[in-house]
Amino acid sequence: MTLNAPTLQTPPSEPLGRETLALDAGLVIDPRTRAIQPNISMSVNNMVTPGEGAFSVDGVEDLTTLPYMYARWTNPTVTELEQRIAALEEAEQAMCTASGVGAISATFLGLLKAGDHLIISDVCYAGAAELARGMLPDFGIEVSQVNLSDPDALAVAMRPNTKLVHCESPCNPLLRFTDLARISEIAHKGGALVSVDSTLATPVACRPLKFGCDLVIHSLTKFINGHGDAMGGAVAGDQSVIAKIRARSGVYLGATLSAMNAWLILRGIDTLYPRMKTMSDSASKVARFLEGHPRVKRVLHPSLESHPQADLIARQMDLPGALISFETNNLAATEQRFADRLKVIHYAFSVGHQRSLLTLLETDVMMKSTYKLEGEQLADYRAYAGDGLFRLSVGLESVEDLIRDLEHALRD
Ligand SMILES: *Cc1c(COP(=O)(O)O)cnc(C)c1O
Image (cartoon, rainbow, N blue to C red; front, side, top):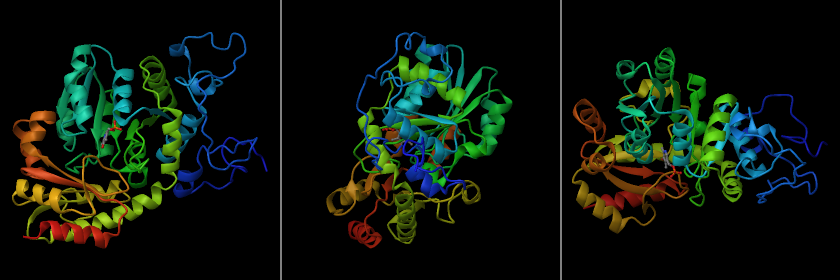
């Protein structure tokens, strides 16, 4: 047995299944203790030999090939997590960041400069939308919000200086999908890269790089850690692109993930597959229950035949995922019922927790605070969301308990 092999004790000759990679990719058996579970390496500093640190980070081709020197550059525990994520996304490399928004801003600020044009999905995570619209123009970066579920709209919006197209699939809270292969084709023809926020899908349900996208981004805070106790983010793609993001945004902007959080997320990712399978299954059952409820006007879940993009979902997704969005009669009264009566589901923001979370996202409020859509884009948002959607992130509770909880809360 080789104790200090970089991956497994004896590197297997057959390619490993994805469930095995979620446990073992990047796993380092500690040569001193033979510990199987990853040790946490909290040390900020490592011994160096004279002259070893005498270089400019921006000029290094791949920081991850250098010895560990200082934790803002590279850290062994963070490296293990990065290798695990790269393996699951079938990417050459990944870089981890302090949060999901950290991964998005690291990508934008690492790759774009004054005079460049960014196209961002008209509906995506609030932090990304507000960063792109509110802050990037201050740095001379042009930003357009485009409905990326419509490839023709992207073709029209492309400019000679478009450098990056950022989408979210499925997007939050509409659960509307982007045709990743079509979008990549159009963006690449115009010389732009494509980044996809795949937080809601996770690599269990979708691997965007195989559809031609260049970068896949995750909030590790959500399903990948999956236990609501650590924030983190990741961006994965080709080594040369990740190297640039790592040097500029990791080292210079300091978006680095801490070793402690990397270690917590490594523990979470071990059970990503069984968690996603159970939660997707339960979400499909809850979605069917909601679809049959008289108080419920519309249910969006990728498992439902009524989803307007069922064909695309079948091509792009291996699992429907744990998120359900639904509209009810009298949103305000129903919101109060949920807040007062739910006993198992938590009335709380966010998604990807092991416990079920539910909140209301009112369309008018979303338009004022985050999206500011008009005309056709607003009409498309309303076609999905009506006056507002309850977003339910299904957890690992018994599905019978979840349905009973909702049934009780929705009763007269
Ligand atoms: C939560 C979330 C983010 C932001 O992640 P943080 O870890 O909170 O910074 C980005 N994208 C999506 C789709 C999210 O759900």
